[in-house]
Length: 186
Image (cartoon, rainbow, N blue to C red):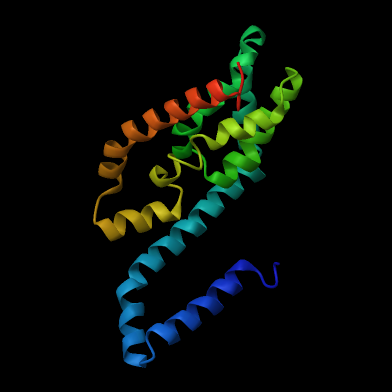
């Protein structure tokens, strides 16, 4: 319904939840203090990722990178583009924020699909296979990753080393299933 912007709704809901679950002011302070470091770190990461994404988008560097990737694909192999996007979407979550990938890279790949007379919707389907699924919790550009590692007391590098093989294998399986079911084509 979009009655209010999401940040305002979050603040209102958080305030109500805090009052309902912790009616005592001292309990509220303890809860806030217990989670303040995580919230502060995540806030800084969100701002940093936004600045990074804005710089890459504003300077057209994302467009140039996407065009360079598309230029690497020979015209005869263009039909493999959805599969290539599906396979590379997970590792690219280390390089691009979701906003940068979906608003910067994917539109260029969509235009390439149109140029090669392919369904551009398949590019979106292929991109989702790794970027917003298994790649999201490994990305150093995603704030929730830092909440995860802080709460589990694990270093980011250790988390990525352990989970990458599983995440990439899962992406490959999802691409294979997408090809078998016809969600994307070669």
